[in-house]
Image (cartoon, rainbow, N blue to C red):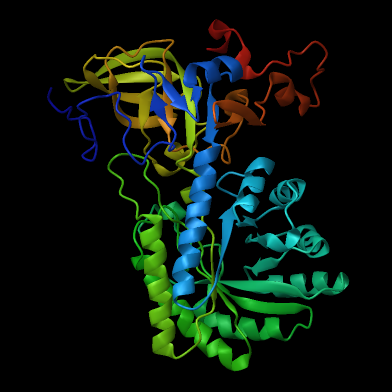
Length: 478
């Protein structure tokens, strides 16, 4: 079969359009002898029948194993160079009370950035001193609340926050630990909108301003300066960007030691994962070793002690553990200059996965309810929303007999899909279900039409259906 010219260069024509590429799917994924996808011991069709589609499925075993392995790798490598490490799970990737509990149980701290995320963390029973609080525009109320409950560390993102945090801490009679977020000037190789360390952006302060601002922090008796923080981007492969950023940060770190202790250095997160078979993320163990070597070498050249180091991964922990299930509603063959493409429209879209529209993100799709011997065809998986850019999977191959009613699965949707979900076209956000040992468990219930109407003050809810939007009869839901 010839390669379709419409396919992107990175997309390989598969020998088997049913095959599940290594590294893209949760570790427990398998197919039954009949070809059905099973996640965490739970059959895809049963999950869809029980909870509806679209449906976010999170493999608990996979999430917890990734969290534990990442922590163990970083602790071992940084112990090798004579220091310790703090791992903060980046809650923005996906946060619920149960996810927070999993992270705490695996020895990770939590990184939050809003009062809502703080509320979730506290509702999960998170000790406040295990929280790091980010945000470029933390409100006065959020800062006050963080100090009141005893958040472990607040990341100061701009000069104005120094006085705000100091005043709140003094008001509550505490000495608040803080980090200062700086821009190292390193722009990691990633999407423009995901890069967060170049200077023309909303986060952090310049390295040139760091010494002066740290002096201001140290002058506040209610603040305890812990160290510098930097985040160079997201979905990063390799350690080169981290190496350059660490070098620049540690140069400033060394000068700050003359004015007092600087016990920590936070190098952020952004570790990449595979979304397609063409992606080659750096293995976590290799990344941990490289980063430890980088920090040790730089501290050695500067003649300074190696500080405690912190990292904030999110996607690398929860991303590969997530799968989204959809039902196919329509298929439509189109001809583009003599080349065929099959549009496969599903019952979700940019309301449950905004990343393709926001970032041009690529994903992988497979039949979930069966396998097929039909020849692969190039497909574009589209959503149900009234936008031409409502694309879930821009390009992949599925068996040519994919048809309405088929169940399909999109891999690596654990990070930033539920977090970015929305109600465009008044579609309810899907449920999130965890699976482990053949047992599904609801983490977040799906929104009903009644939920959506409840906020509209002009609507009487008398007689309004409380069914989820995904539970409507199929002919109505479409």
